[in-house]
Image (cartoon, rainbow, N blue to C red; front, side, top):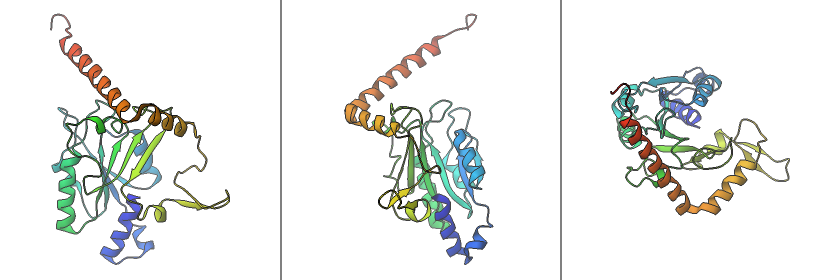
Length: 237
């Protein structure tokens, strides 16, 4: 979606046609902490990764690094909410500000995708977090893994878009041979449905309060483990 959105902006900005814009190599800004699916995206969809190396102190990219990396070929910025190494959150709230600043100053149309594969079912219940979702103007989409902290079965994943505008036009394929018109958004048409059923059951079974209690328990366990690891010694050190 980000790529097609950028193409429309690029054609309007530089007065080129569809054939000409297809010859332009777009880029996507992302932390080196990315999950393997992004590497597949870069290869399959012909997008150049602009990799930002986070500090070894906190494993988060900064707004300043993102601002420096944005150019007129940038289709978007990925903010990772819960990287696969230490679970740290990229500061979406700060990055949104610089994206807005650059968009206004240079008349760009850069958006943010929040990769909340690990944090999507955790961050909503961490009241101390600043806004990181659609409360921020430039967050266009959010993904989450239901098979992680959503407690569904393997292979369950979700993506939510800010608005429907441009989504069906660029991403969905309309099929009508199943008895009515339906949009298909996935690369492979048929997918197992058990993950959806399990996730729906967990939504009904747990509810918001249940997921909140799960999150509080997980945070308590994590704090206990951190405290124990901090006290460990090797040869008296």
